[in-house]
Figure 1 (cartoon, rainbow, N blue to C red):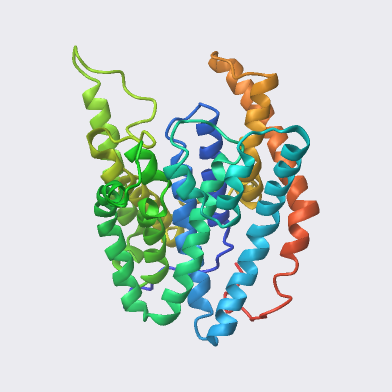
Figure 2 (cartoon, rainbow, N blue to C red; figure 1 turned 90 degrees about the vertical axis):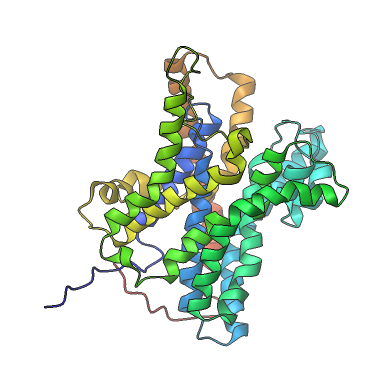
Length: 385
């Protein structure tokens, strides 16, 4: 008797993926709070999830006429991103006009309003200065992905899309290697290769491509042995961690780094070329396990927990507000060097941030989200779970 294939989770709103969003935002919060120095990888997890979820949505509606296909997608993306994004920028701008602070708002507005802020961060903002808009670079990267990928999905057959995704994953290290030199060849000064690569959208292309690949290739071998394939994809990241541990041994060894071998924007040992791919492949392995693995697996249960899903539901607001709230907190209650006290500060900070995100979602964002089906209606074929 032929072995029955496991049930594949295709609904973009499945609990496990909501929980992964929660994990991603938690990693980002702990990174900026100085608790987990590898937490910046949470942004890469967001990109990987976007690659998967957006491709799922686009494949579902690909049979529609192109006007309805693109109109429905962009209408829903605009309602999800624009109100909070531009509302936050407007709020900060009003504060700037009244008080003259924060500085640099006028300079940054053209980049923010055109969703090109990641280029600003990579080229203009390499001195390490922290601005209130600092984290919005990743939203520009997401929007640039939304601008290009829907048309590619509509025009290309599924098999060609698989080839494109694999090609982008393979080419990503080469792209990162060439990026700074290409920018310099245009006569543009590059202060930091590591920061340029991290902030530029081309440096993150493999994160989106990995998520995209698993949305496309649902008849691949990993469906039958998801745990095995998922763990194999995590091996490169494990190698990075073990290598850093090995370097810490011996009389001349350096202390085992708190970033676990994943230092953000680092060019040491070529990390800026291959290091991101190792981390993003690990996220791909996690996706395989959670999408195709057993519902009884402990990792699946963890990401489907109410706490993880709650953070995932409000992750956009948490992301937008967490950085300015942290800057404000530093003014009145600077982060302690004592780990115990800093954990207390983190709990207080997270509680206040969660309240702000909940209020924003409940009384502002949800009004716009309720208009998603006002135009370009489409009856989803996804089965509720």
